[in-house]
Length: 335
Image (tube, rainbow, N blue to C red):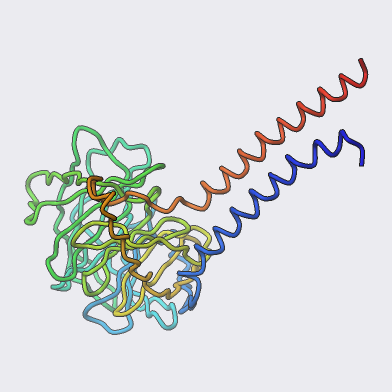
């Protein structure tokens, strides 16, 4: 082999090795959530094109609710889960809903709608709307409106968690690097702004929805490609796994013993996935006893796209190095 090509071979092998390691890592992460995915049905209503909220009915067996996000009428669709057929539509009145991003149902059967989407982060009219779940049939309901503010700034929030036992409510912002978790007051007011207080620790990046498990023991936050299991009482991260591939994974809701995930797009699938296993946090060794205990969001699994970007970046850097070395070699030869 030409010595000049031999020098180029080693960096090339390093790039290949890096790619193999990354792909293997992603495959291991995918095992958890994709082991037993089941497509339950497709939401075939042509009006449902941007499903951004999902909730499982507490009062009507086999019914789930969804709602489109910005630019659509304030309609909540009641879906027969086993067929994906729309069996009811509820028009929400009582305010101007502009970017609805999440749905949740509390222990009393109240359906909560989060009108909190704000891609430009400049809204001053974010709010939660509450109404009794209506089930099948067509309805028009004047919902109670609860104005929401966070601090001096505005935030894009696409995730609402309502605890199935206590009724406690959390919001999670959608951010590039990590989301902020906000706690709402125990009692909400319709005639004044309700301040959502930022909590210690962070959520994953790009959170598109979240839910508590049916027993309230865990909170699950989802992104476009992954979902993350948290201990609801301690707020610590337990596990992070991949979700099945979807066009634009936006929604998540809890069934009795599993989760449902959904996506934007026409004729979008509702997929049943197992709840991620609650992998325990490592017990600190005596030498680590003086170190602070990880808070919520510490050591979060990195999103797959960040792995890809890292791989591409590393390959580009190595490729540039290879090109420079090759150019130098040719210059030496020509000289």
